[in-house]
Length: 476
Image 1 (cartoon, rainbow, N blue to C red):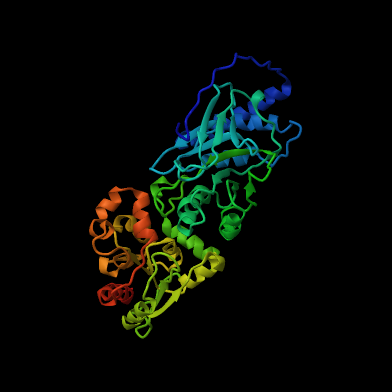
Image 2 (cartoon, rainbow, N blue to C red):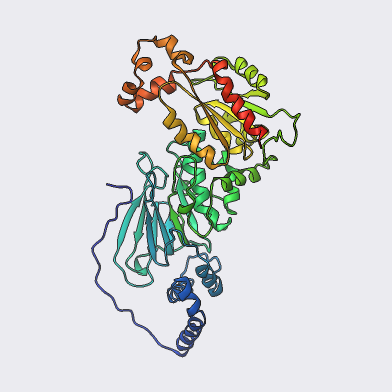
């Protein structure tokens, strides 16, 4: 079963509501027709259904009289204006569910109309404006749809209002419902799997959006609180924390869409605004008040030494000769330093440290995601461990670096520079036949080339890469 499988339900017997006509009703209808005539030409141009919008507004005015509901204000002009300026992305029209399956990783459902979120049941219900068939979908709200261990959300289109749960809180802003868990806890996955897709899903609302989170450990929202606060002006609602409300929204996006590794495909962004990775990195610089928006310019300041920061890992894939590499960087013309990037230091401290440098150097690993904080035009140097990992390295860091406006350089470790030569010997298949190790499966490949390997860089062989980085800054 797919995570967003549609489940049609058996139809219920038809019904015919009794309509009581009175003078007020007739006047109201005439008023609506007058407004329709005024805006119909603009609506025809925009392709939006104003009649549907008016019908929804009338229905809302009836619904606000239901007992037990908390109403967040709504008025006709705001609804009309909102409809007439909607973007052309994958947005649902009123009373629709749009299932987005673009790309390899994710699928989302965008539900528009009278939408009700039940946190206890983890369900999202669309209340139709007229009689309709009951339909149901199951969608995983995490960006990697095939990852196990994430509780699915049930999305339902109900047959009529009579079957709808009563609202206990009503919002005039849309919502984005997403899951954490999964592979988060790894810095690269925190951004690739959640924060970049969440930025894409919510940025079009300029803070006027309610974030609904599920499957989150308490530390995660705390660690990224500055980002979450900038994406939404409202406190994040944890649907797993005994939430007993039925929360009603004009629109809910269920799930977040990961376009590709640590990047954005502008054409896939919903709404009018075509976001890209420079928008996201600029967003981060603004949040953390990072001062540098450009790297050192040797053309403007000939005597200045650009700054290089080496990520000094304390476990696998570490530099075995950190000081020797730093001296080589100094000899190439850099002011060089090393840093141990640990989560307990906090994201802001990491961001400030990286932003104060022009070049980030590290062995393939999550710490390289800190390139997000480099000034645009800076340089990322990725040292790729032995074992034919270049494709993975470029997909996870090389292509994103280019999308961010950075200069990407790559240095592939030779067998003689790998600690695997010392621990396994030259005749081991991991040394002699990397292709065979890859064919044996992902787990075997990662065990040898990612978990058991560190590097001792040949600084003479590495010198041309450092020279390329320096030359790039010299030409800025």
